[in-house]
Image (cartoon, rainbow, N blue to C red; front, top):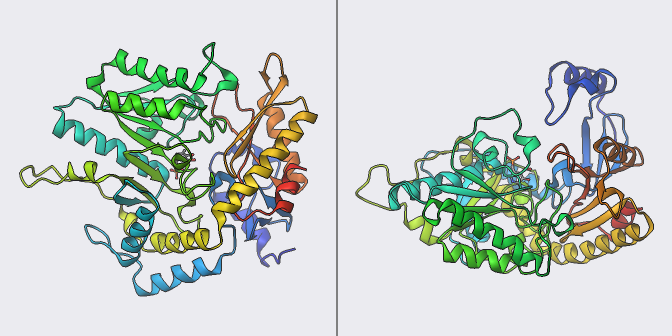
Length: 445
Ligand code: PLP
């Protein structure tokens, strides 16, 4: 139980009257109360009705990696805010420098951190860097940005131009030019016959580069494990071939770690499971586990050096994020990283992730509605079908009902929600990295 504030009814009415919720069809609130979460502790949250939930989605959108109620993060943020809350423009800050150094120590081969507030922004920074490199080093060539079917990179017009989930982008165009989609790599929904699916799916990227013209393509942007597009772990052979292709055609490789970053997959970053050497890495959600807003665009010295020039007055990266200068973000992120390291949460994620996948495979053996289970670390998906042979996807309304009924039984799970026409049928599980065996079993039970 948690103690509710005395004015909770007034809060609910204020919310109903004035708050426009993210991702919500507000028609639903004509017949039900808004969901308001009032308290979190460890793996658990409580709502405004006093109901307790085991949170298997880390704050709804795979964010609260170290769990709720971390007073050491709150203390670090408080201490920093009292010392200096903010100063931006071209100035740095103590927590930003310390966090950047610590972060880079976990990312061999990368060297520079650019701070912002959201995953969308972090990704747009990459797109802008690539466009500037194109203008200044390739005479406008190599400006095209490839993204993958089913991947998602954010909610701004620039990142929606790179959106492989048509339902997220619908109605919001026109978008900026020069973004080109490559096919997804989900073997369960195979688009090609034959062996060696990972290599074949990566070959499809080469086909797009050749079609567009290698001189026009500057960036390939991919999620290491696709999140909202169905929890897709690329098949064996995929990443080696992707890297070969990028090298061959001089295409920079951008790994969007907004979901996978900071331990979610059992390594610091998702790409580290696959031996990838990226040119850009972006991250947001788990960087400070939701205790403060922070996002990072990380890149190599080779990229950074391209922006250092004495001759061209427009040659530096002319970008600013006002709240990229908030010190609360890096202060929280530094403590968040310490917690993951000192509490052995990567090891726990690998062990509990294996248990979660084992439990899901057992469920699949018992329930034909589960067509496929996929995952990496504490990041799993169960794709629901009406028939295992035809793989016909279970309909969206039934999937949503499963999520609602699971919540009614005290466990919050997620679903690929209104992202892909006809394929909003993958249940998503991403509990905090502190999950115990009992938590994992309770989720799958
Ligand atoms: N990239 C990925 C892979 C995401 O899943 C998301 C959000 O869910 C984003 C980028 C955008 O991040 P934000 O919502 O912080 O802008």
